[in-house]
Image 1 (spheres, rainbow, N blue to C red):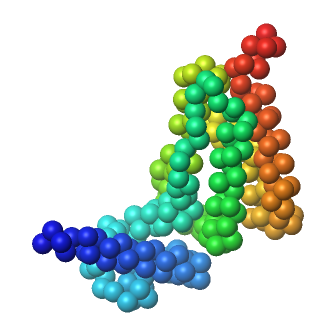
Image 2: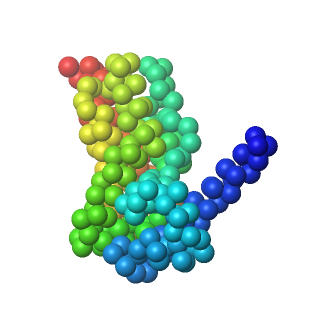
Length: 214
């Protein structure tokens, strides 16, 4: 029995991945309301019973879809502590984060979700839940909290401080890509933009720079 358990786990993971891929395709093609659990099961080639064994409801399925496809984990959190170079630490972290954020499939899904939130309270709620659950995935909130505890950053709500940092680095490039209002930046131009944003963030939040000017 125990020897079969890993195989069953792999099989379950494959079915789960297939369901999420199918739901993603149907969402982008038909919208949230037309993407029923029946339709997902049929398109994925499995029973509705199997679908509900893996996802308790349509909203649960789409919460997991958004969490995994829009907010994937990027691996290690940024290094923290009083002796690190915060600018270099953050630019290294954003180098890993930006290819995930600007992946074309992820951008296409995000455009679909933005359109669906105006028509569907359910998808809006799923997006809200996914956003709340996704905060730990970039590691920025935890990093900010650690740096505040070490006395390197000024006090402030870590979620708000992280939002400030994201806004200064990835906010405008992401909006430009979503709306097609500007051509994509080259990797070099994007890094220069992010580095400028990181410096502005540290100018506003760094305890050391604050003390230097007090």
